[in-house]
Length: 178
Image (tube, rainbow, N blue to C red):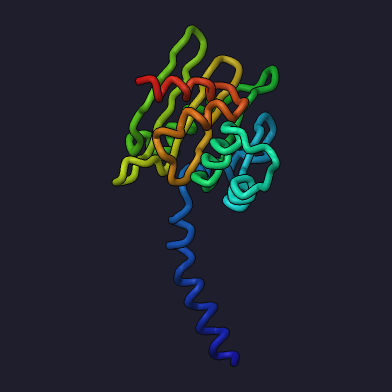
């Protein structure tokens, strides 16, 4: 029995580098900064999306059905928002650009205004679905990165923007008009 436990422990120890390597750049950023001063972090697990997608409701309107359809396509959502306090100085977006290989993503849309830069980037699957939607917001008062993963149909991407009351997400509805 002890020999079996020892072999299992050694096997798991040998796999540890591979398991740690599977961690995404977003996960690394999230783990590094979640809970730190100036940061707000949000993590929605696959179980929560599944629960929301399967939620029984008396409301059978088209909007509720669309929202449930969107929830069924999502696997996870991680978001980090950096709002520096007065006197704090840290270029969060430089840290994001160092950690996340933005070249691995396709830019869907960029919105640049006087003091604000919002970018939507995606990783696509072979069947033209989105496996990850990345939103980057960089303005003079805050920096934000949001990663949404799943098997997201391009036709429902604007529904995500409509259903989330979050800075920058309202711009997703412009994608289906292209």
